[in-house]
Each structure stands twice: as structure tokens, then as C-alpha cells.
Length: 122
Image 1 (cartoon, rainbow, N blue to C red):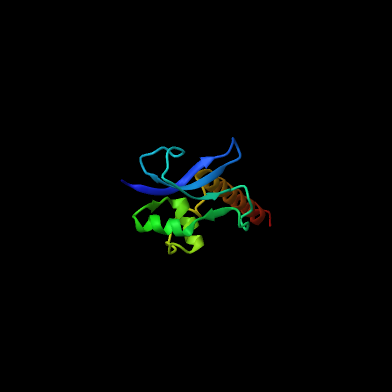
Image 2 (image 1 turned 120 degrees about the vertical axis):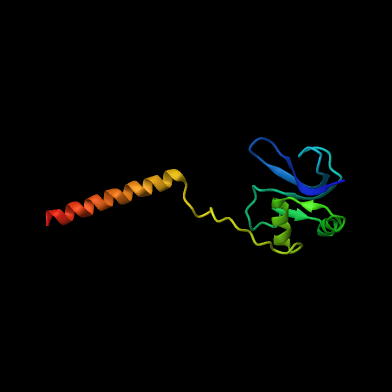
């Protein structure tokens, strides 16, 4: 059975609240799970201790049994010191989108025209 440590969404519309659970990967996101390992409340400030609560011993036990954490849960576990930090690479993160690049090109062209007009006026 392929086990995952993942988030199960609760809370009402526009008020998310998540349970950190160990579940079979074939089950629905908010469906049946085997064990509740903690909670995550994204509405609380990032420095709040109540934002992420986990039973680290239970998490370590599930990881030892071969459960795979999802990306978001893996980041929480890295912050808690359970997993080693993984190097992530997103080379496109700093590249502006196509429309922003087009605007920058237009702005540069207008600036060049203005510079030429100022040089011709002298």
C-alpha cells in the first residue's frame, strides 16, 4: 500500500484549515485516512506556534515505514528539523512573464527615441 503524509482540507469557504494525515495515496484528498498527525492553520501569522502542530514521533514512525510526504508537508518537516533540506531549483522564478517583457521592450524603445530626439535638438 503506497502511503502518503499529506494535508486534508477542512474549514469553511475562504477559511481553510488542514489536518496533516497519513493516508493511502489512492484515497481522496479529504477522504479516509489512517492516522491524524497534526494540524496546519494558514490563517495564523507565520511566527505563530499554533500555525503548524505535528506529532513528530508519529511522523518519524510513518517515514520509517516508507510513507512519502507531499511537497508542502516535506517543507513543514524540513522547518521542524525532521527531514534534511532539499535543494530546489526554479530557474524561471526570476524571469518576468511575456507581457512584462513586451512592456519593458516598449519602454526601452520609447526611451531610445526620446534620447535620439534630445540629441537631434542640440
